Image (cartoon, rainbow, N blue to C red; front, side):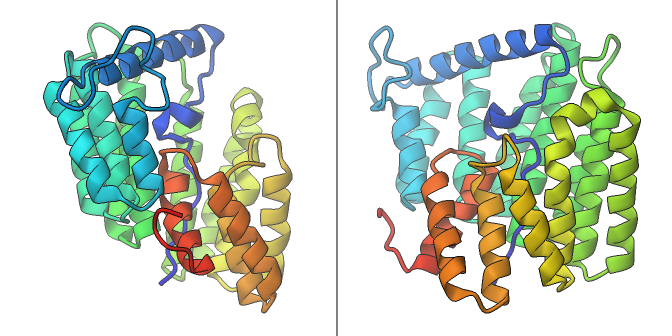
Length: 320
């Protein structure tokens, strides 16, 4: 059964891969923090692999090894490593980073419930950071809820996805002044999510209303739109795909993957492959599934869906 939905920002991201910082100061601070957290996770994994100084980002580090196992479809093996990283984490931040990785491991199996369980643990960590770094803490709480929601909509658990998207909005909009992420960003993300959910539920009229709302929000905040505009064709294409308007889906997804920042998004390529397949264009669909498979090497929601989905479509064995 097909279950598809678009990248939030990921997290991408998961993975902080798609965190959208609205000020240069915040971007630099977040990247620096992410590096430190990642290093802490990797160096804390005594029971898994003793890390030497400077080897936190080595290809054979426990975190990277476990991530690679997930992309190969060996999720049970990966989770043994992630659990050891959680158990041996030297700091709360390192533990939260490993818990987020565990959430994504379950995402590779389409396991909404366990993904949400571990993302909640990460949210709980960021709650402890509200006094020390309130802007980042509330933003991260919203991000984690949205990341879990993304996995759940892809897995077909629409009610849980809606609950988590609304939770993400509630948490993210608690960010105090001076805000590093405007409320319009969260308004846009919620409209985007509600449009996809409406399409999945077969309610084209409601989906169209949310698409129109998302367009108005983008137009109202050019600064925010500069970062988020590239996700709009994706929304239009998604709604079209799930309401069987295949020509529109084709046009919008082709537009989406041509935009800077989307050209290596495996999920968008998978969606275009689905569109081609439903149009009876088997060769084009297979080529797009191959592209999606090759692009899905990250450890985040787009890859967590696209990798196993494309593997099945291409008839590839796990570990390929």
